Image (cartoon, rainbow over all chains, first blue to last red; front, side, top):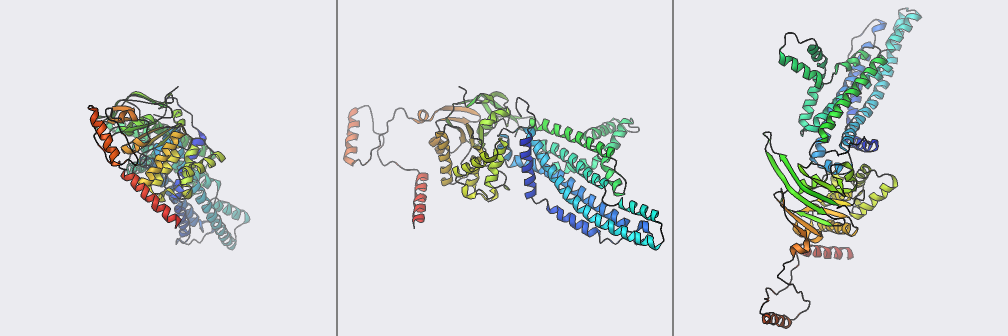
Length: 304
Length: 288
């Protein structure tokens, strides 16, 4: 249905659809979520945390809590928007017949799908950038306060300059680092994968509810994909043929979301290696391309 | 010269259920529309009009047969470069204003810059929505939505305009405006393929019509040929006194072969009466 002669993506046309999708979502007031994020950041600072009497543990828990709450809220926003917005936009265009008017113009279906996905991802990206700026600001202020408090305590206990320098370096590692920026990027990449899964679901489903529910189920199952894959390749001891086929299906159809768990390590202050980040980027690109291609295969033949 | 529309033996079957039943929505329909013609496809609801249009636009694939637009296979994206389409009861994006809507569709067709800005202004004037250009479509009336829909169909200056029930749900004044626009398109040499079940409107604007019933084309031809009653002749007189009418009746009676079937006052249509009265009230209000 997409035409007898295949066309390459037209970046200009994809950009028009992406910008329109972005505007559509903005006018649906999704940015209100940023206010909720700001409230979470403010709220975390009022947490009643245990009092410590050694310099190296003073205030550290607060920094963990800020990062954990912020990345958790970012993940919630990014995944919910990735699934719901993608699940909503395509069936809504069909229901409102706006899709007729778009595809009646010289718009290949691939351009339409790519534009929709890019629009949703742009909105998630911009939102995450704003949240990240807020997080970095709050974390920088709090890290400075914690370092000052720790150094004052260390002075009182008579620590050497070298010990104090080590303490400050360790504490600043828990503040706004490049690894934390990498973790925020990983939040975005995980949302990109789940949005492309939702896109595929919405090409053959006519129900937004179905797409949303199945999208979230796949998101949860994604954390067990690696286990299913290992189980299949290990020969599936103690399991029948049905179990092996089930594990194969999960391993093939569902994305492996365990690789995105590097975010937790970064919250604990570990460094996110560039090689690992590149691997996550590569895996994400693979998933987005595969799910995007499958979406096009279904949508190109869809009768509207 | 290629026909603007060439539908050849179009057949379209739809699956009706999980168990695999099939419904034939269109059955070996052929239509040829020459450039510059206004063609009306009429038929009752569910007769296959919209499916025929969707097949022509490549939105559904023919089960059998083919559809071509100016010689190009309608399944090819390129064939839509020259086509504007207004679907039945379009909603469009409520969050966009009238001008933004036209700009969006214009950009999809590759327009941009000053050319697009001028085109948007020109089209808003054409469909009488210049005053509502910055109002969001969520606040548009049904008639305004139809007119902005017509404007988006014309945004890339197409050579063929396909209109699916263009006046559905529109009041008589809005309906008249849309018909005037169709006549204006015809004046510009643009081919119009319209489908409707409002027969009087089709009669007013179309050069040729096809009647489709249960998926099959049952009659097709030039409107004047289809509507002419071959064995009757119409004479309309202005300011004729009864004596003159009487003499004409005597002449007819003397002929022996011809017979006078009816004399009386010709009637206007209720629609014309409505439009005339609303126009008079509008003029009186604006002059006072």
